[in-house]
Length: 115
Image 1 (tube, rainbow, N blue to C red):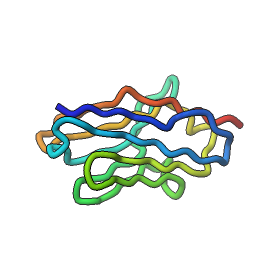
Image 2 (cartoon, rainbow, N blue to C red; image 1 turned 180 degrees about the vertical axis):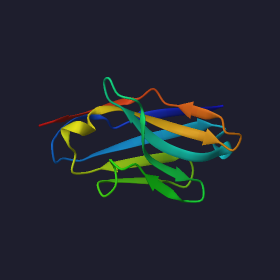
Image 3 (cartoon, helix red, strand yellow; image 1 turned 90 degrees about the vertical axis):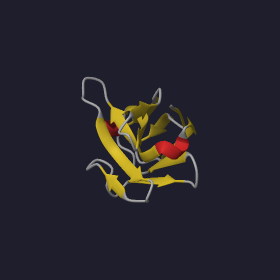
């Protein structure tokens, strides 16, 4: 089992920055991929950024050039978000996928970007 706890969401003006953190606990050595997804009201959940245990990174189109994902040595993944736009408003979820392809989700953190 893996537990994920997000933090760092909030209200920010357009053009501003936020950093989200996701701390993993439990069987962290089973984790292969960690990442961030988001879901805006009335929309499907979409992938924002993913990072593998080997350090490979993929960004969703909405994040390219504005967001940066990183991972520390053990169990925390970060999403540095810059040049935020009102359309970035969503609940952001941390995700971890184990080597057995079991997916775990955090509870989500709200990001609201005002115009």
